[in-house]
Length: 411
Image 1: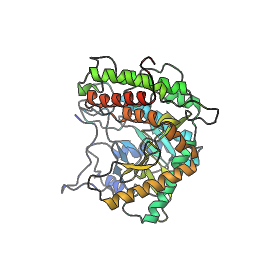
Image 2 (image 1 turned 180 degrees about the vertical axis):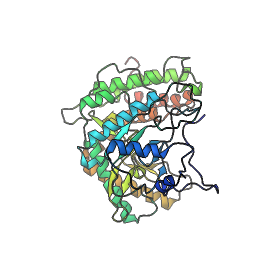
Image 3 (image 1 turned 45 degrees about the horizontal axis):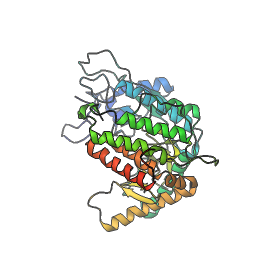
Image 4 (image 1 turned 90 degrees about the horizontal axis):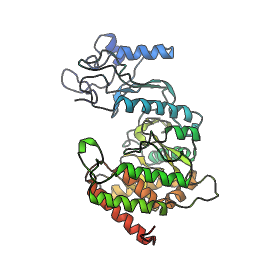
């Protein structure tokens, strides 16, 4: 079974370096010849953009895509394909394209400019032979921004601080931007992380009531009844008594952890866009003066109430806030020294301080939503393992908070 192509190797066994693709193609030596036809990609781009490809400086690989335009490494028509289904990929591509179009009117967010895109096309089974074309691969083509992805080891501390300051300003602009309600309503449920309800019981709206109903629907979708499947089918897990009891505790807690709405505008329940994978690995940065010129890879973008927005930024660690809204770090390597940890915390402080300066409401929103955020991110981060233990711990937390909030058992 396969979800994507392997990266090609040279005859001596070394990895292809991504250079001189156009020259190699002209000589009939494309490294990808056994996987997909690079000539078809070039012709498709030329036809749709009425332009000529004269050079391909470099091609690399991301986790799911070739970084040449944005061509998927997996073809839905390849034999034994077990990657994201066509039903998952089509709305994902359509949403990402809609986000790029929406954000072109917001230059402070620096979203890449999308020139052309198309969804993959699945041919009728059986898929017994490798495809000779690329129609089964999603494709997005962007205007190239100045700069490249930054190797975080290279800049000086002052240059890193400059990149962090720009990144915080961009992240603040994204938080300050409110997408049109029609856009949010169209895409909200489709972009919600699994496990997700089939529908939402109330219309998408920037209100406390909607946020409560969202949490209730998410809990019901994640933890059904005792004996029902929980998580992903391949995990073969079912809801046990501990998870079922935790569900009831969480449902009781939800109304009590949602701060009241105020007359202040905008409210903490307004709808915002979250990038989903914000970090230097998804930015173009110039090598001479370390300017952040674009933010790309919005394929994990989602829409959330502001109270649930995630401000994190990935460098070699993730720069985040703790439950008190103070700068913090996660995903820290186990061999990190005390001096390195001080350095990571300095980065987090540089980033978060400017984020709060440019988006002052972010800090108070995070503080107001402490419990709601704890529950939301716990649901988001669960990967299907040990549902009894995981949700048992979450249920214990809920019962403790119910007690601290003096909620009686009748409520």
